Length: 321
Image 1 (cartoon, rainbow, N blue to C red):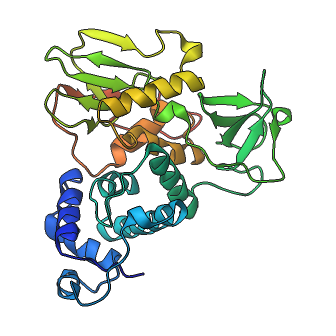
Image 2: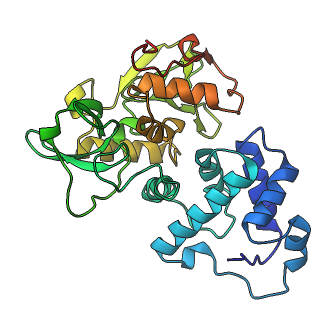
Image 3: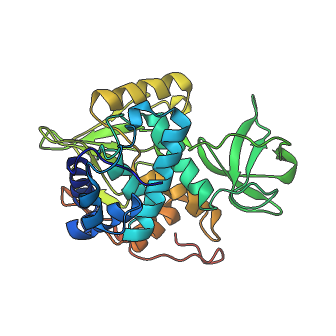
């Protein structure tokens, strides 16, 4: 469906935002991709259309379901046209105000990400195959998880990360379970304070998520970076491992992220689909795959690329570590 704009300002700003957040994407290519994704032949036709027809309603007037579905359409199309990852496109699009002034919530970001993976066939609906969502018999309660392997001892991905379960511990529900993004991949565990006062938010596996430098906007940081100097380490759950994924802790972390201007999902969140692929069973291997497959340069800062992520071995009999 064609998007009718009230002025050229929004498409121009969106193209600049895409190019800024995706360094390998030139502005001219971002403009052409954005025009085609909005159902125009090229950027020139988009410019000529301004004021010629009734404009599309701004996204703040759309209901939640329509807003998320149209965002998924745009992100996938822009990814196809530019070659950039859907994760990078989503992060940039959420800040572009292309179709209105609606501010994306964390729930929007998570749901849109899951819908993209579902649309691309990375999450499955079949029984007993990698990517399928199952119920896991657990104590004291049952939990949902994605199957990473099938047959024999099954590896599953839950809120807390990956682990093995026997076939008797896994239940395939008759009604589909709701997709979810494991907290293990996006919820912060704490932050490091650097010598210059900057803070770097890290995950439960001590992988970088966000970089907060005084006077600058928060920056998404690739999880394969090695932080060179750390002066202090702060935990949101006071170092009590069993607390970190509990609902009360989650809400505390979400509030802290918002208070510090952090919106969206970290790069690490894009590791989830990799666990549905053969050979990827550990977070370190998933991060290594991400590091060696990215086409974007690493950001500059007080870090280096960790050498253990320079190559990947996916043979299960010859693990990477």
